Image: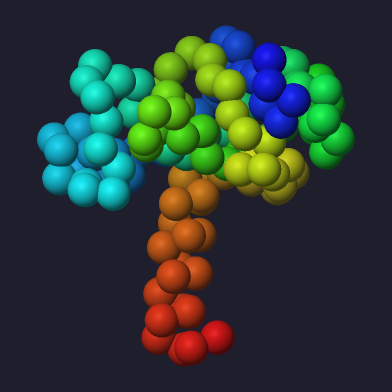
Length: 121
């Protein structure tokens, strides 16, 4: 296992499906080309089963959410398990369900890009 990796084995509880996933699947996302067959899916929420030696912010059984990959050569979240970069994950808010948190990552990025372009923040 790589030092910055967090593993979800049979503990991915929810995955988000975004319009970008559909574009990647049919080859219409030039910035996110995939070799098929591939495991797609970007967003996920789950329970940490293992963490690499340099992962400090998560421990076994933590509920987390974030981005698994699903672009480039990184396998995605539409699977039973995933190995994710710890820097792309955060602890799940206690007041949200797994399904609600799995829907957030790409939405947050889209909103941030919009506000940075529109408001010049």
